[in-house]
Length: 249
Figure 1 (cartoon, rainbow, N blue to C red):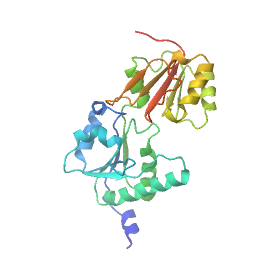
Figure 2 (spheres, rainbow, N blue to C red):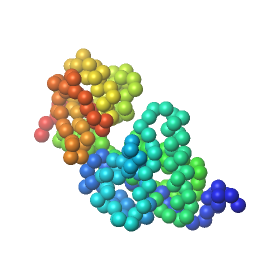
Figure 3 (tube, rainbow, N blue to C red):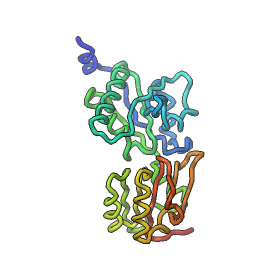
Figure 4 (cartoon, one colour):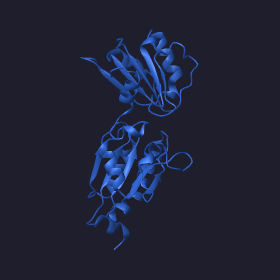
């Protein structure tokens, strides 16, 4: 029997958990997420550009047991679909043998595992390779909600409509969203911040826009207006929120 046949015939699969760890503050980890995280023997996580455990690991490392195995996975920040698919497949291939041995594995992910999360792709890869593996997602604090809490503002009220856009590759998407949504959230806005600033300036919305950088981390910075940020360069983990209707306590 080949190793692949052995994997597909395993009768004692471990379980794959996708545990949301929040966008930056280790106290935003849920009680359920913490319990599961401290129970398993293997903790998988995206690695940074230097091949070391990345941001998700840094958020929860104080909660981990010394004897737990940390498995960094190469999940690059690129747009090329072929390269991304290969990375997700490779990650699955590294996890499946552990699961086939009956080991439970936690994949920790920044923010919430159901919102623009790499975990979704890794889980798909594991399912393709080993359909019998049970996969469970543990929700957590997502970055848009954390950002609004930091600003002491609601994400939405009443009948307000929300648009959440990922890292923008075509800023025309913002123009369209502003036509119908009262609240627009731009995830990881850094790469297009200058273009977004010009659009909001032309629409007279700079005073209705806020910028939250590295929310929940010691480096967190809040800007309640973009008026003075024409030449600003935000870091990668930055969220911009446009709220057409003012809100104050």
